[in-house]
Amino acid sequence: MNQLIRCKNCDDIFMKTPFDQFPEYEWEPDRAQEDFRSLPRDDFRDFLTHHQGHHLENLKIIEDSFVSEKTYSEPLKTSFFKATNGKEIFVIKKFREKIDEPLKYQVISGDFSLKCASIEIQWEEISKQLKREIKPLLSQTQLDAFLKLYRHLFKNIDIQDLERVPEDSPHPLEIYYKISDVHLAYLLRNCRNIFKGQEYLAIEEFIHRHKDDGVLLLKATYQIQLTEIAKKKKKPVPASVPLEKEKLIKKR
Image (cartoon, rainbow, N blue to C red):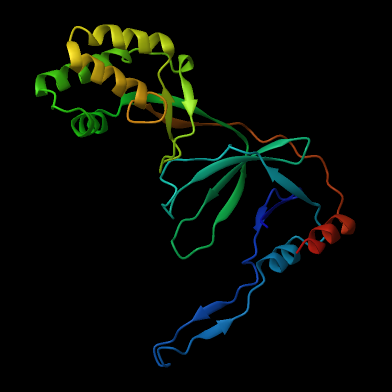
């Protein structure tokens, strides 16, 4: 299991993982293609050696605190999350500068928050779903009118009035929300000005079918706001706490 460790003397962070002792494989042009040279590694042991005599502590990552400015699959990105030792909360910066470098972790003096930058409807997905589900097909005028109505309904909405849903997103700064019962009633009432008879019944069923977990969810895009503050003067830390380090080593 992964284990986050902080040096209290230096504020250095190490993420201990099952891969710490995996060797590196090096290939040289004059060797056979399948002949790689194995280079032994022990990253955690190197960390302990570098911080010999320092005071180390385990940190627990705070659940759902992870944010990043790029998609989850992007290897080169800067991310932030929070961790605690049970007394203090630390903001941790996670990053790498080159694709072939290991991830780095750094304590940030300050905090971060998320600010909603925009709320938008999934207009393209809604249009495709309407065409797929409602037969006979609605006219383009009706489709455009429905999308315009839906967009107008949430043009000046307060994000606090919406309920977040656990919709999967490839981007950590994209969050999905469902419409409230009040907005739902307003939408249905105004749909009567666009659709009549069977067409209205079809659009009413469509709205109820997709309002909680489908294309009618609203997509909010957030921005990371990082507030850095001056570091406090650190209190002297004992020069050597062997018991603390021994506990960390035993968890290998």
